Length: 316
Image (tube, helix red, strand yellow):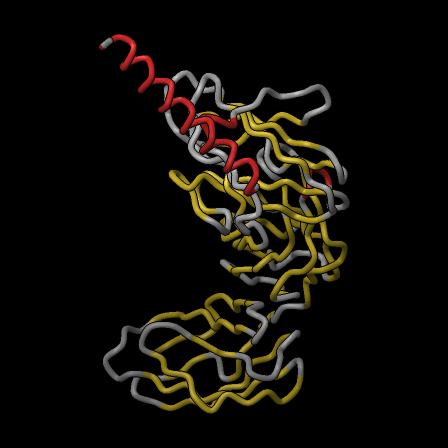
C-alpha cells in the first residue's frame, strides 16, 4: 500500500508540472531558458559567446535571417543575450550546451548585451545585429563634431556618430598630416577620437573611417576639414624690458577673430586685436621679476589651429 501511495503522489506531481508548462505555452510566456535551449539550424548566422565577448560583432544579416548564439567557452560561466530594447532575451545559459536563436524580420540596428558582464549602450560584453543596410559588418558613420580643425591643432576630441560601434573600434582620417592618437568607445552610436593636425597638413576635406575589431569598417566622406592655421612670422618690437608694457604687432598669416596669443612665463598678454588675417596687435606686460631671455610667441585660433614664432621676443 505504501508503494502504491508513493507512485500516486509522484504521478500527481508530474501531472501538475505538465499542466504548468502547458499553461505557459498557451499564454505565450517564454519558458525558462534551460527548458528552451535549442540547437542551431542550417542557415543560421552563428555568434560565439566566449570569454565575455560575442564573436563576431556586429553581424550583418538580411531581414528574415536567424542568428544563433553558441556558448563555447571551456569555463562554465553564465551569460545572457539580452536586447537593449528588451525585444529578446535568452535568459541565463552556460556552456557547452547553451544555444539561443533569434529571427530578425525587419531592417534595423539591434544592440544587445550580457546582463551579467555588460550593459545597454555597448558597455562591457555587448554586440550588435545589423539587419539590412549599413556599412560592412553593420557599421555606419554619419557625422563628426567638430567638423573642422586648423593646422597645428593638437589633442582635439572629435565625436563620431553612426551605428554598430563596439568596444575596441579605431578611427582613421584620410590623407596625410592628421593622426588619431586614440579612440574611446562611448556607445553603439558614438565614439570619440583624439586628433592631431600637423602644421603642414594639406588644407581641405577628409574622410573619417571607423574600423571594428572584426575588420568591418565604414566612412563618412569629406565630413572633416583641415583649415588654414595661424603662422606668426615676426614681431615688432622684438624685445622689451622687465617691468615694461610693450605694444606689440604680430605679423604672419592665417589669423582669425578670437585668436589667443601667449608669450611665455612672466609675460602677460592683453588687448588682443585682429587687424586682419596677417596682423594682430596686443599688449605684452612683462613681470619685473621674470628671467631675461628669448620667448616664443604662440597664436591659437578659435578652431584650435596653432602656430609658433620661435624665440621672436626677447625679455631684457
